[in-house]
Image (cartoon, rainbow, N blue to C red):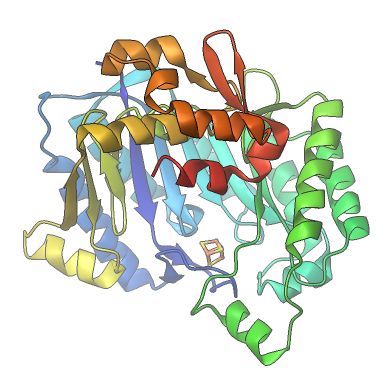
Length: 378
Ligand code: SF4
């Protein structure tokens, strides 16, 4: 059995960004205290088929997990180490946000064994940050990297978002120059999605912000890949680039369908075989459920054979190295190329996928239109 990943959701932020639809709210210290106790209790009571499951990645996601006090992070990690057999050299990531960090706090997290930092720079343009309702400015984004390095972090990722309202190819290009000059070990980049029921969607409906242009966003994606690859980054997943050896080990588990156990509100888990389950989304309701010693799980899905096959294809295609046809045959006992012959021929004729000996991969256009490709398998 491969080691699992452990995901810990921390649903607090300093303020809500206007485009965000994650399960997160503004930080309240009383709820945070109760929430951390609830999390620890969920981790301690975790049941799995293996008595003490092996794990080799821990990921604090959110939200802004770095808003927690070091003592709270330490208590959560203690619970994880007591319940799971965590491999030496495990990757321990914490998501952070600029403008919320001090050198001392970062040193404390580092001393607790957090060895990878991932933060939301999003853009290095102050007016674009303002449009997104971010609480930091571009200088905070630069300074976060400096602080992390001073605190001893060498494995540092940050996120950029393209396709923002009023963003132009010129401002995006300046963003890229700045991002690449900072030489993070890992970069994630996203095209903005405008979710219904967010303040940004409302602003766009009212005409207070322009509608982002999809074609322009596609140009930005192409430019990002071109510049980053020229600068020596490896494009290893649709939205992720890294310097050699710095891919996200935790996130790769999602794409290779390995087991990941999630704790906290809205956390999703997968046992690496046939069962997925997810927790109550609301932080306060999750906390009360745990305080009442009730299960936080609100949905369990047993994957049927067809869904398991489809998932292994569309998750695997997210990795630019592609889906290994030999592995697929070993796992499911059939030939993927025969099974989906008509669909694959159509995708290949449209220039969206390609075959390279025993690997099936997305092309550059396929990566841009990945949702259309994946929808064929869902
Ligand atoms: S910092 Fe991230 S998680 Fe928090 S509100 Fe903003 S986008 Fe959402």
